[in-house]
Each structure stands twice: as structure tokens, then as C-alpha cells.
Image 1 (tube, chains in turn red, purple):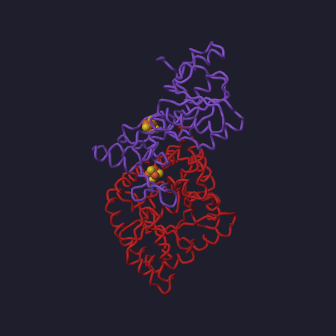
Image 2 (cartoon, chains in turn brown, green):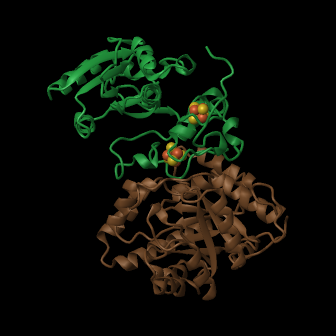
Image 3 (cartoon, chains in turn orange, red):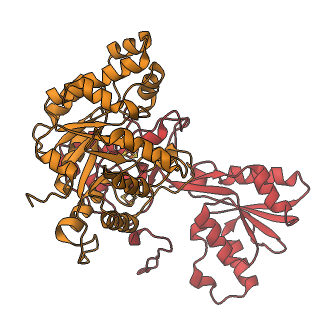
Length: 297
Length: 239
Ligand code: SF4
Ligand code: SF4
């Protein structure tokens, strides 16, 4: 199965070029312009961009529509699929539909619990987990069979990636899970956001025996408030004191954030990672500048 | 055991008053609910005293196990009156349910249904039946241990059930939501109490047992036919 390349994103990763992916947040209502705006900001700077799947379980526009809009505008989509709201029937059905409209990359995630978002009373599904979703997608793509073993005369052609939380402690169970995802057929990994070089170093070390291309995730820290929120509520986040101080004393926050993110992008490249995954969290218009200042291109 | 919590008195009283029941029989249970001080002898008498305060005629009794009250074949061919007598005889405290307008059962949902199936009198539940849990000490938490998934994997998970104790019932290891060793749904933002991530517990236990390899194998997707609603088992031997 060596040279099956369906997407520009995977082509870039495979060519050992430093690959930059972005991410957009679908709006909570029918605001198509919000999608278009984010895509326009990103499209000249990243190879592909993720579309999130109702993160933390808040109800927003589905993943599908923004992926289509994005690809119409010329940017390749990475379709995030979580196991929170869909059982194995709906997940496979969505993958088939996604492939039919030309989506070439899927990120298979377990998903946040329903209890985390604005509909905590909803029934959590979790029929599959990220490992099983990955395995099933690969089975559809490579064997031309669905989970139940039924033949697909026209199988989907897309790549499947997975998430990774490098800041978790202990890290070993997360690495064991990554190994299972790779065994299941994961072709790339994008990580939870990282701010601390020590986390990146540990990740390099602990995954040195694995072949999978890893794109560490970066989300610009826009303020000290955001940093504190992340430390308090987001799993596995570590932010060096130096960074916190910079945010606290900054005279021009936007500039500081751009510089800090650029520095991280440069570090990630120097450490030899396959690429970087930028989640702009509202700073879409500055992504180009962050990449430019990093000097990675 | 079955963990229950007694409903509030107001809720129980409202169910009685809604239908103007005046003669009520309270039936406790000597099983799990007695063990957990929710529906045993003492709690049955206490609830009766409160209900009597509304000048109602209340009698109390206790069944050894309400889930094991009369075998269906023993009463199958009896008429209502005789069934009632037979059931009454199995309840310590009275041998006559005649004239009783409603029964309040202090047993779990299984006991309530068993009783309701036997007698032609309206049965009111006094408990909210919560889950299967283990014995705990005062001040501690009752923790759900098993949802009865019908396909036990405890042998692979160090005796800790991920189906029940992982908030997402994950089968292949922890999700990315583990927060300082605790489950994401027990974060202070959404919960009052931290609950350890089941998969971190499993990982630590397997490591101690030298069986981390158990965790490294991909577990197939669960078969929900084994745990879907309306489950039945053929009874091969009646004890
Ligand atoms: S694996 Fe199934 S049967 Fe075993 S303890 Fe868990 S829920 Fe119960
Ligand atoms: S944090 Fe642990 S217990 Fe909670 S959902 Fe994730 S894996 Fe399950």
C-alpha cells in the first residue's frame, strides 16, 4: 500500500517537506461568510485545514458543509470525525459521503464528552473509539469493505489521521494508544496544542520508535487570561513561566503572540517534526505573518 | 449490590395523594436496600410514621427479598385473592393485604416490578434505583462497578471495568481528556467531585501486574446486541 496518495496534504507530508496545516471553527449558525473569511485567511499559507466536529459538544455548523465550502475555495479540507454523536452506521455513512464530495483527509477522534458542552443532557454515543474508527476507515479504503465486511464497489479514497495529547502525564498510556492507532492504520498525527519545548522533546523521545509523521499543534496564546484558562481546564497543557511573563508585560499583545507562535513554529521544524498544525483561535488573519516570521519557508 | 436512593418524602406523598389512597401497605426489602439503609426494616417504619401523620391507615411489612417473592409458577393458576394471600404470607409483618388501596415498595426497580406483577393493587416505588455498586464506608462514594454489558472483559483490564467506569465506555485506552489523572467529565467546570480516569487506573494496575500487553491489543467494537434493551435469558434450572 506504499504509494497510495490521495491528497495534497499527504503528498506534502510524504515528500518530507515541512507541512503546515491550519484549522477553522465552524460558526454556531448559518454564517457562511464566517467560514469563507477563515478560509481566505488560511488558504495561501497552509496545505490543508481541519474542520472541527462540534468541539466540546457545543452545537455548531456540521463538519461537512465547511469542508465543501473550503474545497470550493481551493483549500484542501481535513474532516474531523468524532465518535461522540454518531454510531458506527452514521460514521461510515459520513465517510462515504465525504469521499463522494471530494474530501481526501479525515482526522479520527474519540471526541469530548457530551457533558462538556452546551447540551450536557444529550446521550453520549461512543459506539466506536478513535482506534476503531481509524481501523474501519482503512478497511473501507484499502480492502473496499465496510465494518460489517460488505463489499464496496466504489470505496472511499482518503487518508486517515489521529490526535495525540503529548502533555498527558503519565504519557505511556497515550503512547500505547498511539501505537494501536498506527496498527489500525493511522497515517499522520496532529497533536493537542503545545507551548512547552520540554513537552516536544519528550514527545520526540517517546515516539522515536514510531514511523508516523507527527504535526505538533500550536494555538496562539492571545492573552494571559487565555493562558490561565488553558492551564486550568485543558488537559496536558504546560506553559513555560517565561511565556506567561511575556504575556503579562507585553505592550503589544498581538505582536507578542505572533512572535511567540513564530518561535514555536521554528522550534518544531528544527526538532525535525513532519510539520505543524496551527489552530488560529481567532487569529486567522495573522497566521501568514506567524509563518513568515518563523522563517520556516 | 443494587444501589438505590430513597425518593424525597414529598415525591412519595404526592404519588399517594394524587389518587387519595387511604389504606397503604409499605413493603420493605431485606436485600440490598436494607444493607444500604434505604429500604430495610428501619426505613420502612420511618416512612410509615411520616405517612401516618397525614391520618392515613398505614401497615408495614418486610419481604426477605422482593426480587425473589413467590415464584411465578406458584401463583400462575391462583385467583387474585389467593395470590394476594400467598404473597402476603411471604411478607413478614402481615399476612393479609385485603382492603389495601396501594402498596409502596421500598425495594429496587426489580423488586417493585416483581411485586407489581404479582398483585392487582397499584404499586408505588419509594426508591430511585441507581446502579450496581459495591459496599462502601460512610462518607465515601457509591461507585458504579458494572452495567451488565453481557460480555465481561475484566480479565483483560486488571479487574477494573472500562465499560462502566470510563465515561465514554472506551475499549482501547484513555481519551485525550484525562486531566491530572482524572476523567474529563469530573473537571471542576462540570462536576463537584474528581473521579479518577478508569483507563489510568487500568494502566497502573496492569503495569503492576506485568500485563501491559493486555492494553496493547486492539479490542474490537462492542456488540450491543449483548446489552441492548429487552434482554432475556432462558432459565435452564429453577432453584
Ligand atoms: S465488562 Fe461488562 S460484565 Fe464485566 S464488569 Fe464491565 S459491564 Fe460488567
Ligand atoms: S478521561 Fe478516562 S475515564 Fe474519562 S472518558 Fe476519557 S478515558 Fe474515559
